Length: 210
Picture 1 (tube, helix red, strand yellow):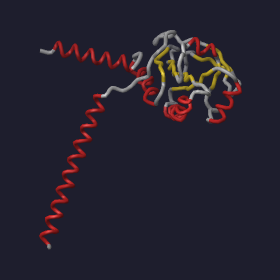
Picture 2 (cartoon, rainbow, N blue to C red; picture 1 turned 90 degrees about the horizontal axis):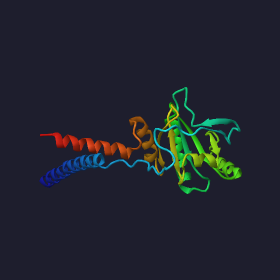
Picture 3 (tube, rainbow, N blue to C red; picture 1 turned 90 degrees about the vertical axis):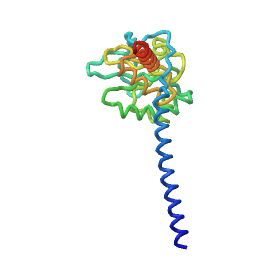
Picture 4 (cartoon, one colour; picture 1 turned 135 degrees about the vertical axis):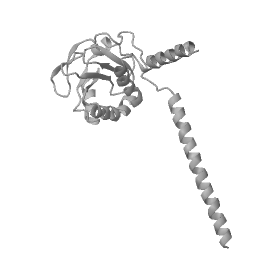
């Protein structure tokens, strides 16, 4: 009887050790796959603006306060401005609002977020009340969307503290939004451009290697 217990315990420990090695191998493989899969950046589909160009400046009224402020102006306090174009009738926009509020809090040291739209004022006021957006600057201007070349929603334009377009694109996830921040930090138009440049550099180095 004792021998059976000893053998069964030995087999059990061998199984546990084997599972540990298997989990370690799988975790390592997932890490390798993660490094190989390129991040999905926000898709730029703008024929009106270019990254690096001065952002159009407009004086607009904040629906939430009734005060006028300038969109697209260079900041003397080293702060960037994110124009996030939404619509009360856009279902994707609504699902992204919690993510946007979270980003507003986590990036508050350098970023101001402005919600932008157009249409009936009453629709925006209901939208603001339902999703508790009273603390965020909210503007309604058809001219703003036209000057910034917004054709599809949700769309975001990141304006640097120098008043120039830092990055922009369609936003369907937090990853897309963060790709705008990453593009600004790396000084490239988009993550896709950065990955393309990296790939070309690696190819050039491989050709030069003996």
